[in-house]
Each structure stands twice: as structure tokens, then as C-alpha cells.
Amino acid sequence: MSPTRPHILILVLLSCLLPLFSPAHAAIATPPPQPPPQETNATLNTNDLFTNNNGIQDAYSEGTLRGSLILYNGRIHTMDDHNTIASVVAIADGKIIYVGNRSSDADSRFSSSTTGTKPRRINLHGRMAIPGLIDSHNHIVLLGNRPGYHTPLENAYSIADALSTLTSRATTVPAGGFITTIGGFHPNQFTERRLPTLSELDAALPHHPVFISYGFTGPGVTNTLGKSFFSTITPTPLIFPNGSIPSGTPNGAALLALRNLSTPSSLRRSVQDAMTYAASLGVTTHLDQGAFPATHTPSDGAANADLYTMHAPWLSVYASRLGIIRLRINFLTLDTDSSIPTLTQRLLDSFPFFGNAMVRTGAIGEFVTADYAGGPVFSSAVAKVASAGWRLEVHSITETDYISQIETFEAVNKPTPITALRWVVAHVQFITQEYLRRLKALGGGVNLSSWAYLAGSGSSNTSSPAGPPFRRVLESGIPAGFGADGANIAPLNPWVHIYYAITGKNAKGEVVNRGQTVGRQEALELYTRRNTWFLGGMDEGMLGVLEEGRLGDLVVLSEDFFKVEVEGVRRVRSLVTVVGGVVVFEDKEGGL
Image (tube, rainbow, N blue to C red; front, top):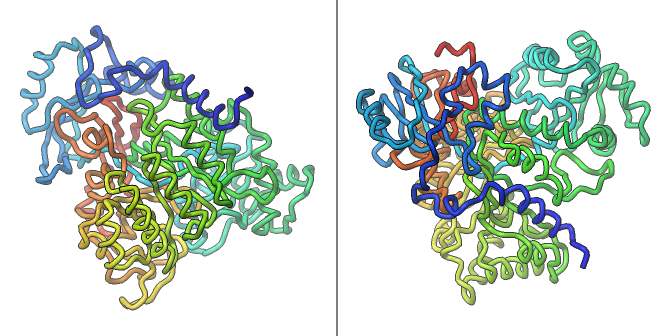
């Protein structure tokens, strides 16, 4: 029998993960047997980390990053149940072995350990550190599949900022290489409220073609070199004299042409770029929510991809022991008839929560059918997922969709209990107190996104906030966490999302979510301790909190998040990002 496309994906997953998977990872909460004494990346000169891939590769053991490190003289917010603040954290062989205030005690843990590893020491000089952030709902796999040399613009606040970002990127790109930005930002965040023009891009990037597009389907813009390239393709996209490309099919034609230039090698490079960018923000664990199926025509947008090959470059990077962030993979399906053939095959051919501490499969979601807001196909699919015992995540962005979704959950729960499966409704811009109560009774949870930051609008009073209702959700007591939904219609940057959550302000500076904001401590909990619920399984007790026995994921921040003025929250970054005790990102100009 010839393999189906889902079968092919499973073969790829197995070929990449089985060499990395071991019984030690099947029960990761139980400490695995210690390997022979070895030097790890954490003991290397930091310069080697970025010039020699063997730095990362040598830090891998049994499929996961395992380094040894002592961070001291800091303000380390552990995010435990008591909100403990420590000054010293020690990590041995990838796991935390000490949290406290005495470096001598940390040293003694190493002297009594059997690893034989000499830890690297980092003086934090009073800097704030936190657990590695968890994003429970994003599309980072799509970010790693971007064509060209993708360059996020979500942190630019003017045309000058954007051009500076692109010019800086050009210094690392061969002449003639296409520099791209696809999704994750909006002109609303620029002072000028517009995209750069062809002439501005020509002046900033005279040796590189450029393609910039926002949202799912544009509009976009290009420069003279890019326009020259696009004039050679069929169909030729409409490009105006100022370089602007209309949204929809013209933008899609340009994007398709660039995707057709991608190679396995360029996609692996793009994956590593996406990983490095995420690490620079302090996000160390990502629960990816898939993509819309690709048609390989100009109708495809930023959120479309081949569902059976999109993970291949990511798995290749992990199999090469070059992965530097933790990836969790949900499976999106969009069946349109009640026989739900795609979902049925997915449930037969895939394994939930299969993998290791670096990369692991997850649930069905964030779509299960095309009629995601409820209907006969949705009901059949939900029942099928319940019968298979899988977790499910669905997507809610209107004032009514969550009602039919949760009522369908309730109907399915009667014959097939789902209360132990942790089903999730994502985004929930408008969910009410009643339906939060009903979802909570089903054992469910909600993840929250500040995607309204870029283009959201709402009343300046509490009568019609843009959502989501952060305050209402937290007061309900339902499991809740942050899922950025980046990087198509929302930024990946967690600090932008936190800014929106604590201020209610959109990118224009308008208050659009009045009455539903939360405090800084609460927002940070949604990205750390609270978000572990959405990972579940072995991850829940291993991430999101800095305490002994958990994985050594930690971020040293550029600013004290609790003291920086509110407009500065968006500009917080990582100075040092640690995954499994290994320094995977370091800002050389950060002052540590």
C-alpha cells in the first residue's frame, strides 16, 4: 500500500524523533541516568556559540539541551506559588539544582553532584531574570517557513525604525538576496501610519530586492529590484509606481513566487532565524497551532502552508541538534463534510504528546473543521476527537462563536466525558462570565491574545471593549494563559502583548480595552506559571517556574519589568536566554 500524506508526515516525525527519543524522556519527571562527565556548551566561550554550530550540537544529550550554569547576583523572579525572588540559580545537566541566595550553596551542589561538569558562571549585576516564557498559541512554524531572509518589523515604531531594521539585516544577507517581512506587524504601529515606499526602500537597500506584506493577504510593497523580479513571473502581480502591491491575489502572486524560490537549505536557515528571534524575546517554549492548507496558487496568504511538509525543516534542525527553543505541535484540520476524512486520518496516523523535551506533538487545533463556529460537521468532528481521547483547541473571535462551540462541547460530554482532556477555546475576545463558567465546568481553559493591539478598535469606555476580557477571565478562575497568535495578524513579541494587557492601548495609543486590563504580575503569570496548564503532561511540572527539578529555562531581561515606565514595556528584550542550562542567545551589547 502506498503511503498517504499523513503517513508521510509520521515517517518524517519518526525518522527525526526516534533517534532522539529514549525511555528517559518517556517519564521526564524522573531524573534519567547521568551520562559520563562531559563539557557542555554552557562552559564554552560565548563567542563560539554563534560562530560554531558545534557549540549547540555538543550541548545536546539524548535529544535535548543539557548544560550546566550558575547565575548569581540577580533579582530572579521564580514565578512559583509564593512569588519567590532569589539571587542565585544553578543548573546542572539541563535541570535546576538550586534556587536561593547563596552562591556557596550553589557551588556545593555541583561538588556533590555526579555529573563532573564544570558550570559556567554569569554575574547578573542586579538584572531581573524570569523563567523562559511560554507561548501557548502561535504560528512560529509558519515563521520558520517564510521565504527569503525574513526580517520581523513588529518592533519598529516609525518608517525610520523599519528602514534601520532592514538595513541592519542587509549586512548579513548576500547581495541579491531577497529581504522579506511577511505578517506580524501593521502600519498602525508606525508614526506615519503607512508602509515604506519604493524610493525609501531603494535608498536603504540598493543591493537587495525587498518584499514587505502585512496581515494574511497584504497589501504589500517592494523596491525597484523586487519589482524587476516580479515582472518576470506569471501571473505578474499588479505593482504601482510607488512600489505598493494590492492585497489579495496580487500580493499572493508575489508571495507564491518567493515561496517557489525556497529550498530545503533556505528553509532550514529560516527556521534557525525564527528560533533565534524567539530566543531574543525570551520565549523558549512555543505551542504551534498549524496553518491553513496551501493551494499553491496566488490565493494563498501568509497563513497557508502544506500541512504535511511544513514541519520538515523544523524537524531537520532538531535532528541536526541545532534546535534552541522548545516546540509543541498542534494539528489543524479543515474538513467540510460530516465524514471528516482528514481528521479521521490524522487521529489514526498521529500520536499525541509524542517526542522529547525539545520537540513534541500536541493536540488537534486550532481549527477542527471549516465550520469552526459550530454546525453538523463541527459536531461530528468534536465527537470524534472526544472518542479518540485527544485534546482539542478551537478558535473564537466573534460575539457568538464561543456559544455554539461550548454548547457542542457540553453535548459531546454527556456520552463521552471530556473533563479530563483540557479542551481549549482560544482568543475569546467577547466571552461572557456565563460561558466561562460553563467551559470551566467541562475542565476547559482559554488562552488569550492581544492581537487587537495592531488594528483593534473599541469604545473609550467600558461599554464595548475590543477584548479579550483579561480581567473577567482571571476573576472566573478558569485556567488561562497567553497565546500571542503571532506572527501573521499579531506580533510574536510577548512584551507587546503584555503592554496591551496592562494598558488596553492599541498600536495607535488609543485605549480600546478599558475595564479589562490586568496588573504586571498577572500578565507575567499568564506567560509563565499559568501557561504550563496548556502544555500539560510531562511539560506541566517541568517548565514555567524556576524551582529545583524543573528544566533550566531562564531569561535575563534588558529592563526590570516591574519598574520600567509603562511605554517602555514594549521594548523589553532578553539579554541572555537559557534553555536547558545552555546559553542559546546573548546580547553582546547588553552589559553582562
